[in-house]
Length: 301
Ligand code: HPA
View 1 (tube, rainbow, N blue to C red):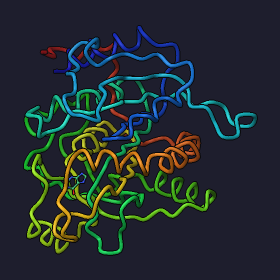
View 2 (cartoon, rainbow, N blue to C red):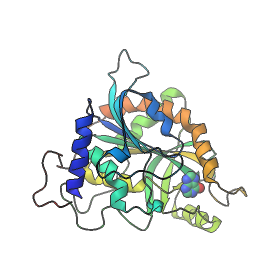
View 3 (spheres, rainbow, N blue to C red):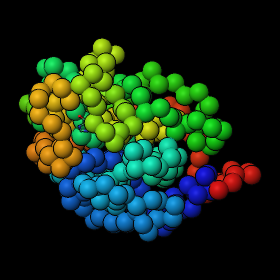
View 4 (cartoon, rainbow, N blue to C red):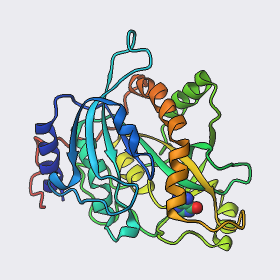
């Protein structure tokens, strides 16, 4: 696996002209953020060695690398970013290793922060459709973990600490960005389930009792892999629906993708405002040692 990561990372390095500092993973219905990237190089996942194509409607499957135009371009330097337009999901049948492969490649490219976005169902009774939620913590109920199995020490330690899985510095930067914009930003704990079924109303009641504010089928594997590598993580959910049983409305994927599109412009404004400050917050402490140019002795693909 490590050798495959090195091959993918080298391929990406050979295709780009800026070294990204921040990666952004775009969830269902949020892919249009990639249109804001200037001087963009677009690489379909299918062209990158060992990247798998995505199969879900609303997920494009492209890596876009370039710079993010700043709202105050004159005073702030453009931020070099890598955008994953589309992601792989556990419910598609992929292994956790496959799901986190693009994230790990970007970690090995040298990013220091990753911004996850997703569509989620609202569990907290005060949440409304189209709310933006800053994820402060998660509950992994997927029944698997990308770090299960032998630990590749080049990617990080055996037992990573997740006390601050969502970087405090990034949380503060995003809160401050929302305040400057006068934008309402809620906060909460994200529970990740495997899907692909939406939850039953009884499961939603259970999740609420467990302390979850929102529920979805993504994000947590990548958050774990990035934390393992020592890359700082932050994540924002768009509440596309109230979770099952909170209203009598039935859930449909196409409606959820459409609803994500409705919160998208506010989310994009927030990301534009916050991302320059994510670069400027202090560097992560324990960046793992992996470099695409330094294959591990005895690493096997
Ligand atoms: N449940 C799980 N995943 C989701 C939901 C939901 O209600 N909405 C968007 N993604």
